[in-house]
Each structure stands twice: as structure tokens, then as C-alpha cells.
Image: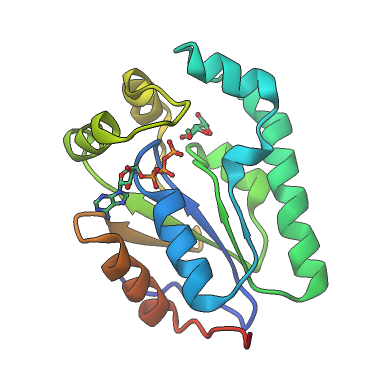
Length: 177
Ligand SMILES: Nc1ncnc2c1ncn2[C@@H]1O[C@H](COP(=O)(O)OP(=O)(O)OP(=O)(O)O)[C@@H](O)[C@H]1O
Ligand SMILES: O=C(O)[C@H](O)[C@@H](O)[C@H](O)[C@H](O)CO
């Protein structure tokens, strides 16, 4: 993991990657350690999107645009407030990240193989997203390119190790409680 240039004093970290890569788990740990505002991107999906995924159908670009706009709005609110922040969003395609891209935004790409993530999804309980959609998530995935402000994290280690690595690599500071 190496730090991208230009991480400011109040970054917005966007944890991205396919379903099951660990976005929610790692972001929740980071939010606890850093005391930064945290938004679970899945909570901003229109109900129809959640129902569609739950029924085993992948989202289309058209399904995703309004959701991405809501996430961008949340990001902008924190930027205006001058607050660092954390948000999860699969952000699978470059065109989706173009909607979310801001000077303050750092994409934290959680990278794992289909086999590893498939095993984790098979063991996960009580989530609307069926593991059968994982292939479609990888089919849509366009990993961040060298001109994007991003850091890539290999997800083999335990969540706490990943969170500590992100904090030290990016030089993040906790907000006082
Ligand atoms: N580093 C890790 N090591 C072991 N298990 C992990 C790790 N990260 C996450 N998990 C487990 O893998 C599963 C998927 O993690 P999580 O729900 O955080 O992924 P996600 O990317 O937020 O998924 P989705 O996009 O579908 O909401 C969970 O059961 C979680 O406990
Ligand atoms: O873009 C997408 O296809 C969706 O955002 C999915 O990634 C889900 O929201 C998430 O992975 C399930 O929790």
C-alpha cells in the first residue's frame, strides 16, 4: 500500500470494491478509531435498487446514477463543513467515480480475488445482497487507474490490521471526541 499524493487535512475516504470485499467492516472500524462522520452507501440506495439486488438481479447504470448522486451530495456536505469523512460505495466503474471525484476524495480500493470474497459472502448472514451477484460485480469492476487519487489495499489480513494500515499509510488523525 502506498499513499497517493495530495491527501489533505480533511480527506473524504471512499471505501470501494465489489460486494463482500469488506467496505462496511473496515469503514466502521476506521470511523470508530478516527471519530469521523461515516455514511453506509448501501443505506442511500432507493428501495427499488435494494429489492432488485435482493431478487438476484444486478443493477444497471441507470439504477446507479441517482444513488451515486446521493452519495456525492453527502460527500459535498462534509466538504462544505470542512470535515474529514468516510463513506462506502462499490464505485465499480470509472464513470461512477467521476461522479464522486473531488479534490478531497481518496478512493480506498479493497482488492481481493473472487475466490476469497466468494467464501466470505457465502459465510455472511443477514444481508440483502445474494452471493450469486458476485460475478456481475467483478464483470463491472474497473479498478482505479494511476491518475486517480487512490490507494489499493489487499484484503487478506484481518479487518483491524487493514484499518491500522490505512491510517498509517495515509497519515490520518483522529478528531477529538
Ligand atoms: N479482512 C477481513 N477478513 C475476514 N473477514 C472479513 C474481512 N473483511 C470483511 N470480512 C467479512 O466478510 C464479509 C463481507 O464484509 P462486508 O459486509 O464488510 O463487505 P462489503 O464490501 O461492505 O459488502 P457489501 O458491498 O455487499 O455491503 C462479512 O461477513 C465480514 O465480516
Ligand atoms: O453498485 C452495486 O452493484 C451495488 O452498490 C452493490 O455493490 C451493493 O450495494 C453492495 O455491494 C451490496 O451491499
